[in-house]
Image 1 (tube, rainbow, N blue to C red):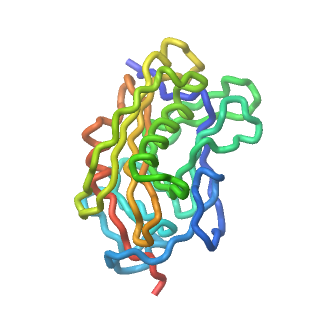
Image 2: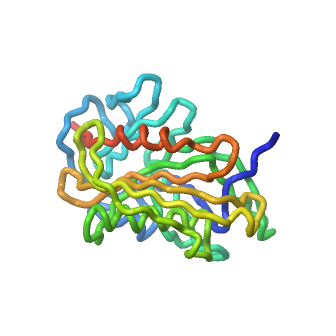
Length: 254
């Protein structure tokens, strides 16, 4: 039996961005890569080229965000985009697709799981079964603040908008990854979106965000979002396993 598909009341967009800024900035300001200096733990090879950073889970793939000096692992069935890709959600009906929230260096499970053109503008929107990536959080007051706002916004932007009342965001929990990186983990989810039938790809969704401080003491975060109540939904245990692999890496070019 075919499964109901993922979201989207909004537009979920991905694009390859070339070049980068010399200074760090909040990825929410727009779909562009950011720059970070070298992080503490050592790694061989050049992370910008994806080489030298090995997965910490056997059989998984490593995603490296050299701009924020971090890495994490995803299952082998996920598609890892090349360095420079940015994924974001925008307000429904916004012709300029201005990002509500964005993440760079994403990885997807079944990237084109649902494809639709509900507004009949000739542009098809693609929805995945799961998306994960990382971003900077300049301007955040704390890791709890960054994780809470981002988890809520991913669910709102990708699944529930324009309804904010259907989102349930859990309190932040202190979390330490397998590498010893500490921060705050927040999960959020929506209810009732599927019944409202925003379009072909409408469904409820969930998000998880782990916020931490990078090697320079700046706020950064790892994010996941995906549909719920559908066949093939990414299990919470898998999301937890992915976030457990988040770690700082050496992004020096030497």
